[in-house]
Image 1 (cartoon, helix red, strand yellow):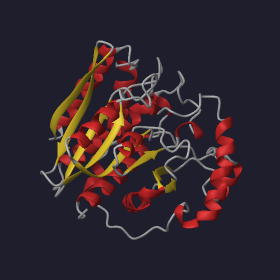
Image 2 (tube, helix red, strand yellow):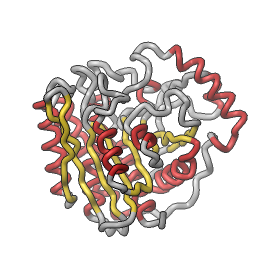
Image 3 (cartoon, rainbow, N blue to C red):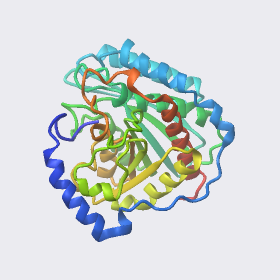
Length: 335
């Protein structure tokens, strides 16, 4: 996850938090979390997201294949091979989107599930890291979730196509450039005339805390709208994505007992586009980010202590089940 202030520089967000608080008060329903509906669960899937498997994936990526920055192409290749291998085992139709940057070849790994349909749903997560950090939460946690999501989708009867995409080059120095893996993928879809019903970006989904005050916000005013305990997962979108964000949040809430909160803001609101979903917005596709809120909760963000032992794999498993429920419902609904 990138595009936000440096690790210890959140001062600009304090001012933004005040603006957001005003927007929250003025727009009301545009930002306030909606009530939890009754949702049908898929109990048969619960046993198939094993926390131990999630941890195995995170350790493989953050230890065996570390570091995963753009200079260590051989480690990125190991990641791509590992992810692609699991996508194939899960029953996906696997393809790669390769491209060159400064004479080096980088790879997006794509797995398609379900039959051909007029539109598709895209779920993605980046597998590269910032500098030489282990990147357990950022972003091995989301890649682990993507892999286990593949196994769930491989067992499902899907009426609509769902593409899982493992992106390369999300982190600096390529963030906000056309060389981001997600930028290449989103541009390719638009150039090919492909319709995307929704894009769901998984960005840091493994760090949780039950300690009071563990969840930070750019402004103290936001505590009136959101919890001060970092025990929830967040769905972030633009104002134009309010319906999508609400549907995903409601589906995730119906799947497990993990708290889920959603926030939508104007697309140009700083901080809203801190991951790969921004490139789908740039191509005119609806997109949201599912996240543990990164540096607003996890002090190991972009640090050497972003390690596998700090993550909560039980709650990660609930995130994966929730995302599965959300995309399954989206795929079962006419666009």
